[in-house]
Length: 90
Image 1 (tube, rainbow, N blue to C red):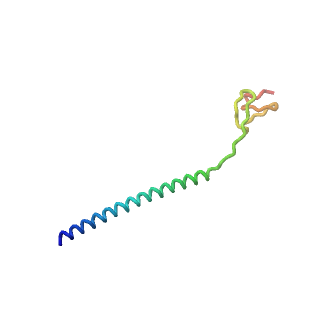
Image 2: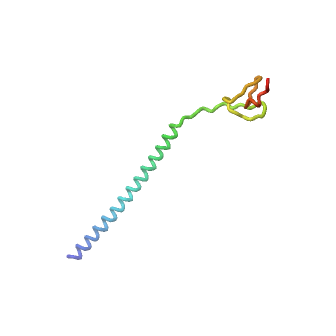
Image 3: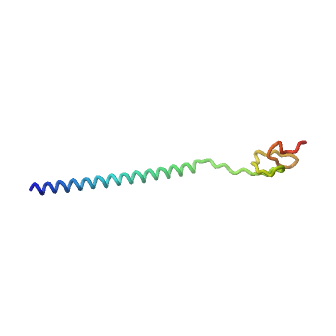
């Protein structure tokens, strides 16, 4: 009778140990999946929250040929220049 109880107790111990390991593994996988979902959500939020500025027109300097933003334009004699140094003196 003691042998049967010993083997039964051993079988139950093995069963609960395996069950515990499987649950821990499932929890770990669930946490990894949730973390990946949070990262993807953060990336999606970051990409939609960025302010996109429209591109600025580029002009070509009549003196040196360098392209520069239109906001930095130095107009002189109907032509565009990249700096006052390249604009012809009046």
